[in-house]
Length: 114
Image 1 (cartoon, rainbow, N blue to C red):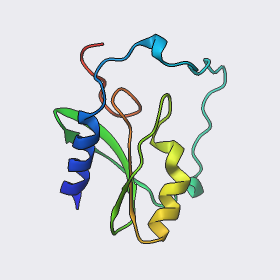
Image 2: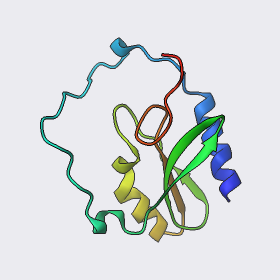
Image 3: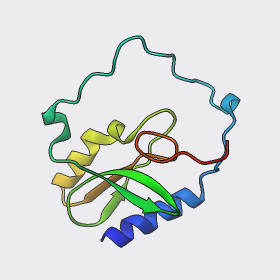
């Protein structure tokens, strides 16, 4: 099953441009003056976090459950954490919910070239 998850990540990553234009994002998030809230143990509900090497980069992945894979892809400027409630809900329904951090976000390596 791990091989399937890596293949899915490779497929997704091959379609993501390795360069971005800072002007292409119409709604950049404003800088926050408050530190991020610590995650409560109950919010994670057994979600496993690990790093995998895919296409020469280290990707941070959060996952839970057994069964058919459901791959969650976050948008700008979010992380896997945006899917935490859906990960738990789908794992309880018999799916393996997988949410990687996209390139340059969270624990995933950034592209070498901007």
